[in-house]
Amino acid sequence: MKLPETVHIVEVGPRDGLQNEKQQVATATKVELIRRLAAAGLKTIEATAFVSPKWVPQMGDNAEVLRQTLAAPAPGVNYPVLTPNLQGLEAALAAGASEIAVFGAASEAFSQKNINCSIAESLERFRPVIAAARAAGVRARGYVSCVVACPYAGDIAPEAVAEVAAALFDMGCYQISLGDTIGAGTPRRIRRMLEAVAARVPVAQLAGHYHDTCGMAIANLYASLEMGVNTFDASISGLGGCPYAAGAAGNVATEDVIYLLEGLGIATGIDLDALIDCSAWISAALGRPPGSKVALARLGRRKEH
Ligand code: HMG
Ligand code: MG
Image 1 (cartoon, rainbow, N blue to C red):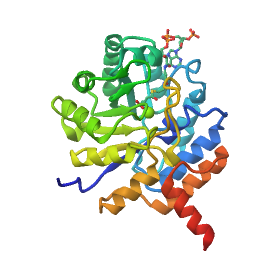
Image 2: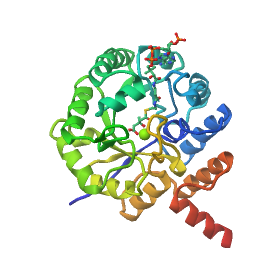
Image 3: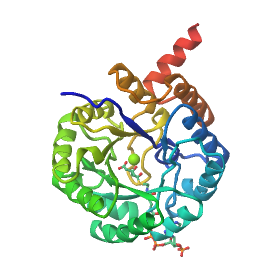
Image 4: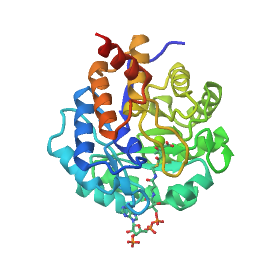
């Protein structure tokens, strides 16, 4: 099958990556990470989450991160932020957000644990958030978590994913990001899930958000490319996880995705060397080696020379 000619990467490291960090990450480090990611050529960088600081203290400096980022924005770069409710939206708009994302799930149990309400309640909560965002000229993206399996309820039916994806799309989300929250997917299951969703939402409006817990994220991404998906979420150095999905690893590493896409001759506009410098920098700041195989290989080779 013909692969897409260009692929868009949504960098989620500063949000998905840092929301699960055990240590306190300084606001200045977050802002500098976002700056370096933009300098490497990323055009969409999810900056932070306007969620309750009681639920996710790591995102408690959300307004400051966004304000400082927007004080010196890189040209042509979007900085979306998560907003679970109207309270989050209002705070995000006050801090200058120009794109937001609501986040639902295809699993009832995960919805309860993550956002403290049922799927149906979450959709009713998102409807005015999306409408108010759009009325303010702000684009809304929709996430669906647990598109393959749930940490509490096990396997999730592809039709359940399609149902929530279609609801968010019909409410006005311009793109639906499909989250394999616990990285349980394999290409066959991802394909089946995408087939079900693509029957309800155009493939051009879908994004893959694959955590790499079982090392399958790159394979799942390739399977999705073959099905025409051309937007993928990725996290610098493979940072991250979800505080309400214990044991889940970070998103697929951005460096690994760019290496794959370059190898396939697919344009991304991202400078892999600059990305690897950024990976080395944030890994040093967090006190551990990069979680990207490509970054480790390239940094090892640089040391040898
Ligand atoms: P709740 O406790 O039901 O909310 O939480 P509430 O409306 O009853 O309010 C309770 C308190 O929270 C009040 O404060 C509110 O003001 C405050 P109090 O009166 O007790 O002092 N509050 C807020 N504060 C700041 N910002 C807000 C906000 N909303 C309420 N927006 C809520 C419901 C949704 C707020 C909570 O469950 C929450 O914040 N959950 C977020 C969890 C989260 O961030 N998870 C990680 C992101 S999702 C993810 O990682 C998956 C993804 O990557 C895709 C994938 O991998 O699958 C996207
Ligand atoms: Mg995630």
